Image (cartoon, rainbow, N blue to C red; front, side, top):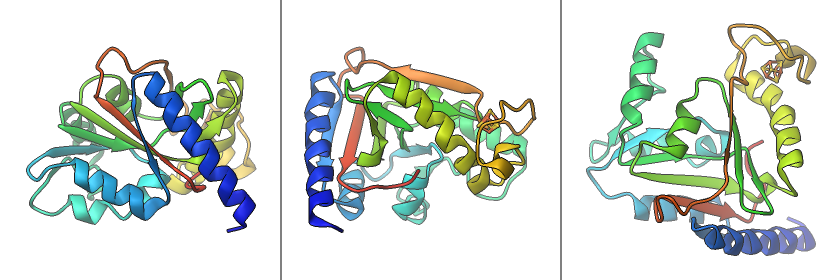
Length: 212
Ligand code: SF4
């Protein structure tokens, strides 16, 4: 990577870690995705139950196969199964020891902004799992809430395309405010602060561009 760009990523990521700490999140800096992966695996003890929130960042960390090892109890939403069982998996994962996921946007003021299709990810980020681990590339950092909402609309078509949802935006590349069953944008949340359950939410800021 261009050294100036890398310096900028490092600088912004370090600033955001301090901001997140000031909002009573457990902010951790990671130089790259490999380092983030090690941090995650060091945090989760053997025997822990784990739920997953769908994200490109998580996919890029190659954690799924690791979490499928018998030493963990994974609520495996990704194994082939009927939709009713996927929903049951979502429900069970809300009481997991750890939720591992990413976020769609982090404002410079330390707010986490997310949009979700099924609601399991955003629900678990707010309440349910004992611990939440969020891994995010520095490309998720935006100036403010307005920018965050714009970002959600920009990335939803990419996620629709990635997952294979037959939404209009998966054809046009831009939001068409669809009314389809496969709509991606059903739940939008803002997490303003980490004080309520101090120590519950860890955010690993990676000094790289990861995911959408
Ligand atoms: S509302 Fe529908 S068209 Fe708009 S981004 Fe979401 S899924 Fe795509």
